[in-house]
Length: 287
Image (cartoon, rainbow, N blue to C red; front, side):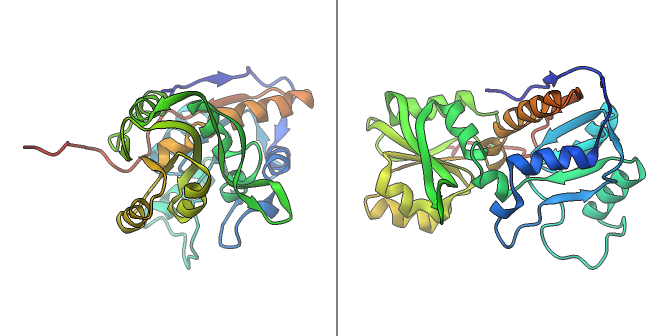
């Protein structure tokens, strides 16, 4: 899969509002599923404001805001929050303050669905599993009291592959990044069961080791990966954080479009193709 700019829908037939979009998103990604430390929901915007165009993106960065302004979007839905940590000022003297001032001054609402979208079903890891051909999935780390929900997913591949072939599939099907795809394990090992976790997943290495032949996630750290492998853990496939979460965007956008259509409302729903992965160059080791 490669990022693209699908337009899902057409011009508004009946106006909807920021508040109505928030309600529909929170039905699919309940705030109660979010981690205690998270900062989700409506970041800025008037709940009564009219919405005709919505842009989905992973990160609420300036490039995405500029894209929204170019599209004349009324609302941005991102996976990552803008204000995850406490702040004492939102003056337009730094990146986040500038982003917030730009959004407000142009009347663009911003909504974030982060760990609530990670834990929901279908959620971020379901989209990652689907695009990689991992089927019959269950949560890697089930939610306490509701084992149908939770962090990550584990299931079987739609066909048995060697680790090398699975790495090739991951490289082809996820958006291209300079980070690329790294792997650890025997390239010829046969992979039948795969665990995935969109975003940073090395906290769940022990869970993956107990159920999977390979684990696909992002932000694997040196010592944790090393200890995992020394202890006989499953093969590891490390991808860019942004690339592991991007497949959720078209899924969430399509779902919202359907929910709005069921209410007799049609809006233009766009998915950002801007790669907001922070890495901009990669070189393999030279002999």
